[in-house]
Amino acid sequence: MAFRTLRRASAASVIALYLLAVSGCGTTDPPENSGQPDVDAQQECQDLAAQVEDGEDSADDRNDAGGETADTFIFGSSASPITLNPLHASDSDSFRVAHQIFETLVEAEPCGPGPSPLLATDWTSSDDGKTFDFTLRDDVTFHDGTEFDADVVCWNFEHWNNQPEGMAQSADITYHWSTLFKGFGDDSIYESCTTSGDSEVTIELNEPFASFVNALAIPAFSMQSPEALEKWGQIEDGGDPTATEYATAHPTGTGPYQFSSWNRGTSVNLTAFDDYWDGPPKTPHVTIKTIEDPQARADALRTGDVDAFDLVAPGDVPGLRDEDFTLIHRPSYNIQYLGMNQAAPPLDDLRVRQAIAHAIDREQLMKSTMTPGSEAANQFVPPVTNGYSDDVTEYEYDPEKARQLLEESGYEDLTIEFNYPTDVSRPYLPSPQDTFNQIRNDLQSVGITVVPVADQWSVYLSKIHGGEDHGIHVLGWTGEYNDADSFLGAKFSEETPEFGFTDQEVFDQLAEARGLPTPEEQEPAYQEANEMIMDRLPGLPLGHGVPVLALAPRVSGYVPSPVEDESWDTVTVREE
Image 1 (tube, one colour):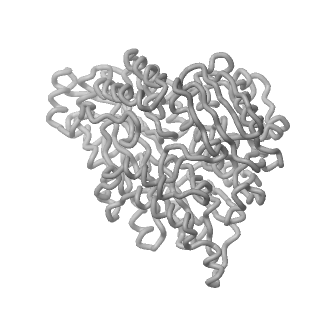
Image 2 (cartoon, helix red, strand yellow):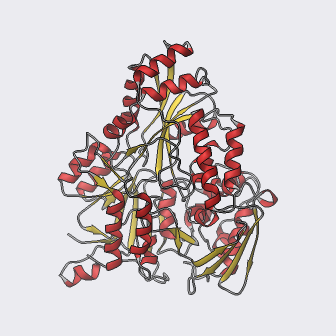
Image 3 (tube, helix red, strand yellow):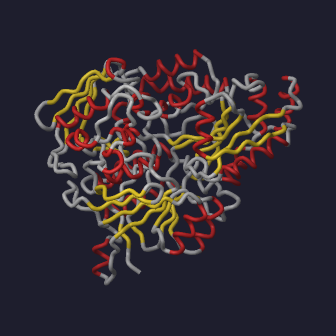
């Protein structure tokens, strides 16, 4: 996490730059059901970062005062990891474990989505956006004793680019490499990796990728032990890379914690890596418990079965606050949206999509269904992202205009299928049922009859992403690095079953923007893409959620990250 670096560098200077970019964007009126005061998640994060940097309320301070620290930090997670090999993961629950075991060349900066040094201490890029030089940190070892150096970096890049054919090269299994590097082997934009001594690496691409360094903070690009992968992670062509011994029992990185055990569906147990390059973690052991139900997670905190949990349901916020639990608001870097499948008429009629957009009161939706600090969205990227545009087409809440558009389109008596998930909480969707109810009421108020279709999360995702048998649906996305491509490219760079969106002009615009060599050149191109997307309206951006974490009063040293780049080596737990 960023605070491994903060022990050696000033957090204030990094955070101040980010705050300049987001000033005025982080505070909104609280949700009506929360009873919370106004929330500035960014300022809260800054304060927590400063406390960690300054060593306030540290374990040493408490021991001096006569307090004892606990042996284990227990965290309540909403789902079990899918795999322990981060290359083949794309879900936040797998990445949460990866952040403790593994490290990337760069990490998210304190309280922001931009890059900060980690295993690489410095880097430069060429003017054409194709060549990147990295200087590596010295004296870093993997959990199995293997030395981390320039040769290991090149081994990892070659390993990523040359996955066996079959499942290991499928977009759903090796999502980040296949999408960001556009394929494997000769089909990818990766060209080569060369070394100069033990601590200098040069990565060559065959086309520009301005956000290459930013993207390397994604846990999928964690540095892994070649020795461990060669011993435990061999995959035959067509084999399942998520089921190897490495992916289930021998994940080996350079992070502050090393793997101990995984009880599938129940818990992951980690233990401190005493030879960690930045010193051993403050708490010797970590347990990540899987507790799917939000109310059950809250109850586990109350009973002391967990020390902290993520994705607090909006309705649980006031009670936990009144019971003196610590609530931390993760700075928002996500989007909640209403998808509209154009392969399902009449959603192929722009007027119908516009009517739906004008029927929904997004401000009220944020207040009544989301956590404090959440704000309505008018495009598919957060305001702090390069390429955010002030000139997108707006769809203000206007029920009368919605009725007029339905009449013009000939669908005054529209009946529409509305898909939504159950048994899940996500940073952008903490309470799917509440979100569905609010939107359904808005649509019915303008004469649209809603047919609800609820599915469990795994079935829901397969239905939305894998076929055309759906109508409108609620979903979202948490950005993984600071670039518009992390939002727009993931959804609108090609035709997908989710949206049935076939506009080649938009696809070409996004491809052009992504291929420009610098962020400065990309900005107007992504702004134009944003404007084009909102004109076509393949979906309606609803809001940017502020996820809430709840901690027992005995926990300190936890600092949130907008992209969930949260390592727990600074966390301490006081015995009670």
